[in-house]
Length: 243
Image 1 (spheres, rainbow, N blue to C red):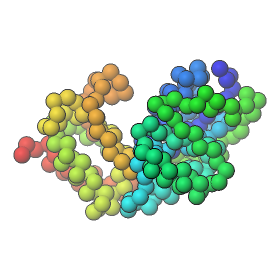
Image 2: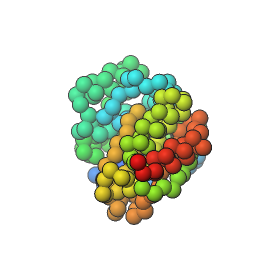
Image 3: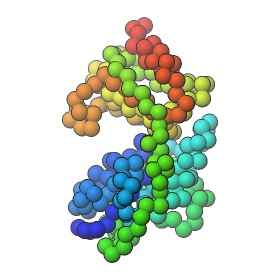
């Protein structure tokens, strides 16, 4: 185990930073304090490497929200390494897109692919147990610190109606919905459904009661910029009505 190394994981909301953190700790037998998600670092903490995590299952093409790419570029420019997360689920064409995109920002930065939440065994060779440096990222660089956040309690919902409403809010009303997390009962499925929305993709799947969602259902958390709480409440209420 590396005794003094510290890694700071940054990236857009929903890029898989916390999942990657757990994977690194398990794979390399590291202590929790050695691998931190950027928004959770204390202001006095020093670290050796900044890793910018990117979910490469989808691209940035066709997005109306220019801030998404702008903020990702800003994080990448302060990183020592780029982590291509969820590479096992990314099509080769999409992986090629991201490789080209990163090289447009930096010719020198190292790219590491994570397959099935496992890094290459030599992934920590870049770390030295004798070197520590102060953070070159500041608190305002961590996007999750500045996101507007709204929590909603819900009953059974129409999943398709909800997702269409949220997507319409982004496309037609200019809401910058960057993160959606939910565990809900839907009219479409018997099992609980987990919703994961990030700045540039949506994922839904059967919720596991014994994982991070604990056992609680019937909640939606929406985060972003320029959000309209009343409108979001109306969308959720409309999605809860039987048709």
